[in-house]
Length: 178
Image 1 (cartoon, helix red, strand yellow):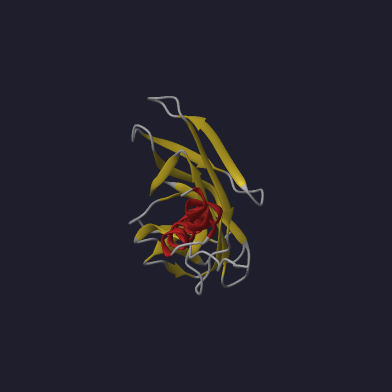
Image 2: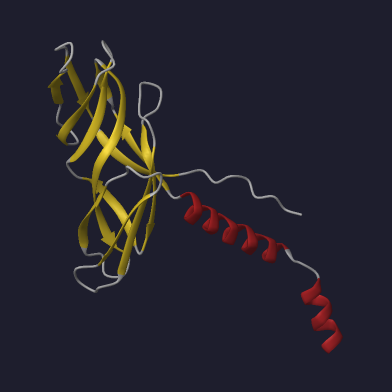
C-alpha cells in the first residue's frame, strides 16, 4: 500500500498540472499587476501626457473600506504604503508610469497589495504641447470633465478629456516549463 501511494505521488496528474498553472497565473497577476487605462481619451493639441500626481480610490481587501492613495510617480517605481482607516491592515500601491499619447491609452501599471484600485480621483498630469513641444501641468484632471490650459510658449489651447478610467489585468507573460 505504501509503495502504491508513493507511486501515485511521483507521477504528476492532470489535476496537479491544472493546479500548477492556476498558481502560476496568480503569481504572474501579482507580478505584472493591472493597467490604468484611460478609455475615451481625447487629446486636443497635446502630444504626450505623463502622470505627475495620481490619486486613486482603493478599497481594503479585508474590510472593503475605501480610502485615497496619492502616488507621485517621479521615480521609476512609485509607491504609497498606508494603513486602512478602518481595520488598520497594510495597504500598498505601486505604480510604474508610462508615457501616454495618441497610440497608447495606458497611464501606467499598478500593483496593489492588501487593496484593490477602484477609481481615479482628480489628479495632476504633465502635458506636452503638440504645436511647440513646451511642457505644462494640468491640475485637477477628472474623469468626464474636459481639462484645458493655454500653452505658456505659443498660447495654443491644450485639452484633455477622459471618458472612463479602467483597471484592466495585464496579460501575463508565458511561463517557461522545463
